[in-house]
Image (cartoon, rainbow over all chains, first blue to last red; front, side, top):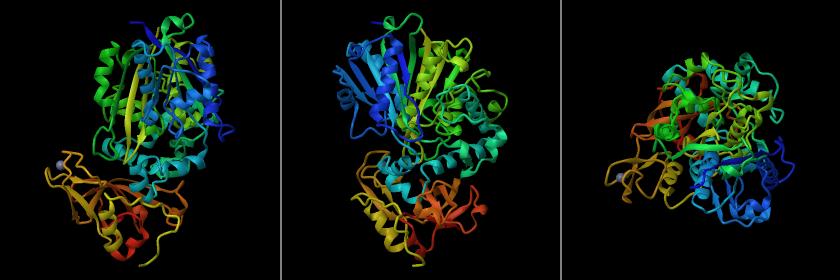
Length: 380
Length: 139
Ligand SMILES: [Zn+2]
């Protein structure tokens, strides 16, 4: 079997208001991914999309738009967990001979008003049983989750603020981030209340842009630039029947993930966790074993999660500081991980980055995101 | 009724499955839930199949309309137009007395007094017309 992994990556420009269509942003990210791999368009024969805003278009019509003839096409239904799932599927597709180079794409052409209009119709359970209560986008749902975590474990807003503040410090070293103004913990705590206990800096800003990952045989990557997918898992609808749980699907596959990878959290130099809200980053750190369940508050109080800290998290600023490009929010951690593992992190390069974790979360439905995913990556 | 529903209130799509719940709320300000005739699981949101045992024998019954707040959020900003006059509003996870969790609005006269663990019950019948879905108030 061929040694398959990630051979290219690319990001489009991010914009607060859309200046072009979603396909256009994805095309820009795709061009960058091919350039980073040294491949030509004609080399691509597989495509997958994990956008949440592309319907009625899909992976096949994306191939039409981009003028690609492909032997494999796949579309995710896992929302913000879809990026890691699609990359894992693409690796398996290339291993199986279904394609030789797969473009994985996600993005959005949106702003805040577009997002607010759409989120109430994201799926039927939101449309029929949440939006009529006035859930405020989905901020209210995550306010419920955060309060439950705070009241169950004693977690504080100041502890969780570490995530937003340190990610902002990371963004200040990332010229592509949309939100780069300096932020202190006092700024974070004093921000306007949105959905108590959530404040303004707990909530992502919907924006426009796209991300791309190119999967293929690692011997086609430029020397020293391949990234191996050591392990990957997904889980949907866990815990079944609970609303606003303070745990997620990651806890179901954590052990299997690290068993397959051959190493665990202690051997990784960074984490790119899905950050629609700091509380969800905190829950991923717990469920993925970076600290014990319920201890993320003291854990964060004793750590720095900046790119040069003792546990770098969302080293480019994440969605909280770069903006959320719809389903592209499920890929921004992947492109940032690949950038770091290739040593191309520029001013925010994590020293000695050889291994890292990327986790996804999404498909918010009745009370929580149904989908969880994770990949363990290693410089090849 | 005390006040009509805001004209821009998001609509619930009535289906063959959820019609009994909507009818009970609209006509009587009551909460109707489903219970599986085979495994006794209480089901919310409405479905055509029991998510526990996949039985299709789901019987509607009249719930007590009482429960306790498990956790909640007080939403100040980012609300759709229909809710802005009421802001801040309380959205809560409510553990119903029947043992099933529900996310619902809690219409609290004093938002600052809302606490996790607080007992809630459905709003009085003459206020139900303001709300598209079963809505609670401090008991
Ligand atoms: Zn049953």
